[in-house]
Image (cartoon, rainbow, N blue to C red; front, side, top):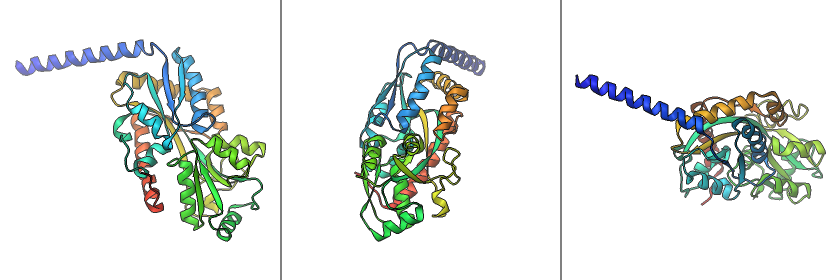
Length: 323
């Protein structure tokens, strides 16, 4: 009888929780949502976030504010998100730096995989090895030869230490044996401006942030960093065609502070996945070189975990470390 009573009590409690969860999801969102983007406006993360935020605001009938919080290789924005209330009204735009920084930095006040709640994957994009248009090279082999003939005279810039843009350059250095000086910015947009001006020489930027500059002739694309050529730049070879085994790409998703109610996580996951299926939205993301990584929160966290482990090996092999 006691077992039966306990079972009935458990079922009643579970039913109450499910009902409460349904109520939370039905009432959500009741006010504006803040989506923290840990880089300056104009870069890849900002571009993708604003495309998604505009349509998600319409679908969810509530304002989604893109809040740019750059600095410290995206750790400033991340820490703000980690410390925010887990009520569904703070989202964070996660990216490869959140996997890379777990190894690159030795004194982080958070553990990203432990302290954040996965919601949904968005897209994966290639990085593009793009150079100052007046640099006297026209191919990856010529760039490598130039770098070896001019050790330490090439600057490669990124949108911050720990980004996939930074680590793609470190991987290129380690696999080719050339020496380049890394210059970190608070986002890729100002880095690209200085490449156009000739103050820096190369960037391995995410395709959405650089493809407009390539199409306008402001910078010259030498190669994409994925295993296969990109449909958006079909005449641009891969780095791997010259440096066998080279592969790097960027991926993006939505997370929230740990403890965000499951009902809200599932609601946002559903809205994100449905938004990615909309032809107009997807056409814009595909034009930026994106391939969908939509799926469940667990599937996105598995990808995040795998990428964290992958880049840990690159960080350790390159010897890069930031206090």
